[in-house]
Length: 225
Image (cartoon, helix red, strand yellow):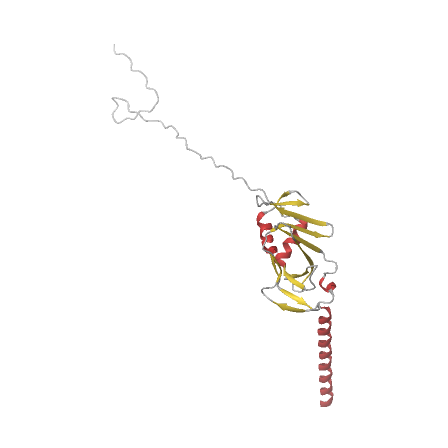
């Protein structure tokens, strides 16, 4: 009986080990290849010039905007011709000037695992230098934990992970361009003045001590014969 119980326990342990090995193997097989190298100072690109234009393309969707060099105002040209929200576009332009990654993946062999063989989104950034230099960023799939996206540049074999706080606004602009909202006009407040209400004044009839006369006319006294 004791031998049977020992054999049964060993069989259960063996099944658990086999199941664990299968789970780990399948998990590793589905994970993208490459060794992440965390760094807090890894930039995809850096530029001393400010961003002058941003163009985003995904399939048939496109949005484009440029900054007027004289006034510094951002304007959307595609798909509508409207002034752009200065805060939304300005913050994104600042992030794109010196584009910092969360970390870099080296030794990647299959870009399809990162959604980068047919990128769903392509970003083109034009800078304000005299030659209007451009940078292109290919945006692939989201990371497993959803905190970022796999991205790369056409001239670099490395795959980077870019924070979704930078990518999500660009993706949302394809459906909802960052059009500047009209400023609400304050309604003027007209002061209200109180008009005093006239009141009746009580008068005293001469000769009638202690009697108060009202404003009702008194009859005239009859002449004495």
